[in-house]
Image (cartoon, rainbow, N blue to C red; front, top):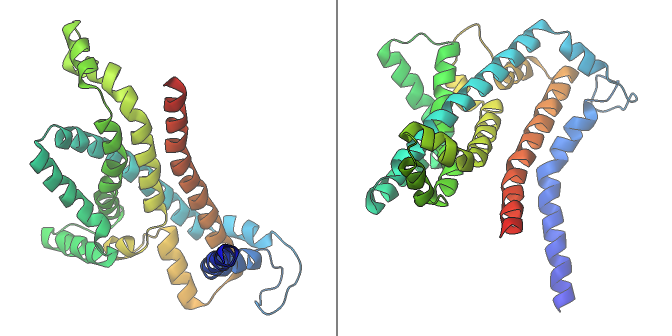
Length: 265
């Protein structure tokens, strides 16, 4: 009976993975297909990838995507870390309320956030473009940074910070010498998570971008409406692989920290 349950469990998990990843695997295979048609295998080729990187419009969208992802993640990491320090210093009840508020954007539907930010920019008379996309990405990235940094903040020993100040260090010097090194793994993890979220975002970018500017996600959407080209398979494959690698880095960092902590103890 137990063996039968284990077999059924494995079949169930296999079916879930099949439905989740079969379309992605199909897309990746088609990106190496020499034939333009999906119904026929024309042999292995990398020409769609070479054509992709010769496309100046795609390269511009790639440049916009990387710049927005990097700067939004970096700014969100700074603001999120400062917010963590402020929230951690609050009373227990106020801290719980603030953490609940910061979790709302992560639980909220992206389309609601996108439309809300679009209406905010319209009401303020802000011109849509690179700046509005950057501000929008910073806004939805901050909660993910707080989520990554707060556990590290809770593990801090406040006596080490106080001891550094007793030895003559200023508040800023004590923070960077004692507190910051302990927070750094959480900050880096939050940065990578924010970078990943920004890299593959479509909905919020779609509502806050202006004419004449595209990211990879919005460019793929525009091109697919015209008709699916093999270059889009290649582009989607590259995005998927990049996001997958970043997620592996994000998940590997906490595991490495726990192993080091266990070794120290």
